Structure formats: structure tokens, C-alpha cells
Length: 292
Image (cartoon, rainbow, N blue to C red; front, side, top):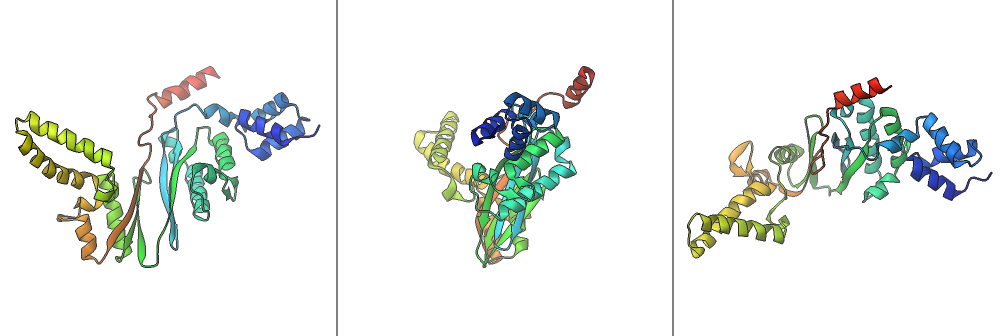
């Protein structure tokens, strides 16, 4: 029986296996969809599909650079235990270096990037089958710089936090110090101009309400708001923050004293904003053992 593209697509969507694996399974089973699914399950390829509903909020972030190009990415796993797995770490390196040599801008485009182990989407599925946990490329960003600019990169706790900066006019040591600042102090924005207008307006409203609740007249409260907004900027804007190595300087002043200017900052903290597992994984494993 001829194996058509639509058959391969249907089996791929059902099984979660890679395109070539689905095509081979259908060929081996003369186009019988049920038998092909069993074939994939027997080979341990289709089990990855069962993991799709699981929570993967652990994992690692990393940064790779080459010349004037860098990529920062986060790859998730279900447990912290797997994030220490050598094969998982190697997978992130393969994905990262492959993305570095691509022009991908979205996860959909990234999934189609070809690595030494096939397309990223198929490579991840194969690793899910091998490792036995849901794995996913959550996010990435490719950054390019000019010759008079440098990258600063810093990984905290082996990749639980990754920070990438681009600094113009200073050296890599300064850029790394700024990346470390970002990792440690968790700024939300690079500078004042990046703070969204609605976020700023909401903060002003909150601070005015606080001042008036303290018994201050409206006109006094308005003046107090401006001072508090400046304090807010020092908390959420990287270049406005006091520099961790010298609190008498802001980050912008520290970089300027070294002849530079911070142009970009990206900070990834693994699992931020995601639902976390709240079950006992060791207990889950024991339950599975008892059930077998």
C-alpha cells in the first residue's frame, strides 16, 4: 500500500513521533494506522506523546556565541534531576549551536532547524522517548552585534538563570559584570524608556493611593509620587539600579566610567511564569514501580 503524506501527518499527530519514524512505521505495516502506532510504541518512539500533558517547568538555560552572533535559550524538563543528565545538557548544546547558525525567529521556525540529529522538533521527541520525561524548547532569542560592541554572558547555578548583555564601547569583563547584575537583581527592563506606559501609569496610581492613605493632601501626594517613581525605576530598570559591586554608582555610571553603554539585556530564569510540579516525584516513581 502506498504511504501518503496525509497518512504520515496523521500518524505523527497521533503518536508525537518524528516524520521519518512515522513513514517507516507505515511502510513496515503496509499503511495500517493501528499497527503502525503499535510499531512505534514497541520501539519506544510513541511514548513521548503521553508526556504532552505533563508539566515541564524545570530544565536549563544557556548562551552560545560565535563572532557577532549569540543565542540565549531555555529548554524545559519535568524534574531537576533530568536537567543534570549529561544527555540533556548535550541536547541543549546541539540545539543552541544549531539555532546560532540559523535565522529562526519563532519556536515554529526553530523546530524546523536541522541539527546533526535531525530537525529540532524530531530530536526533542526522540530524547523524550529516551529520557522518559516531557522536554520542550520554551524560548530563545538570537542577538547580533556590531564590531564595536561586546557580549556579556553569565550563567547562575549551572544554568537556572542565564543573562546576556550587549555593551558598546567597553570590554567583555564590563559586559559580564552587567550580565551578573542582571542575573542577581532581576531587572524587568533595560532602561526607563522600556517601561510600558500602562505599567508606569498603574504604578503612579498605586503610589498616589499609598500617599493619600498616609493622610497626605492630593497635591503633596502628587509630588511624592515622582520621588517614588524614581525609586521604582531603580528597582526594575537595569541601568538605573545601584551597581552590586559599588553601590555608589548606578549600572549606567559604572559602564560609562569604562567608556561604554548598555544596549541590550535578556534574562531567562528557568520556569518563571510557569506552573510548577507540586507532586512528590519520588512517590510517583515508587507508585509506578508498584504498579508494574
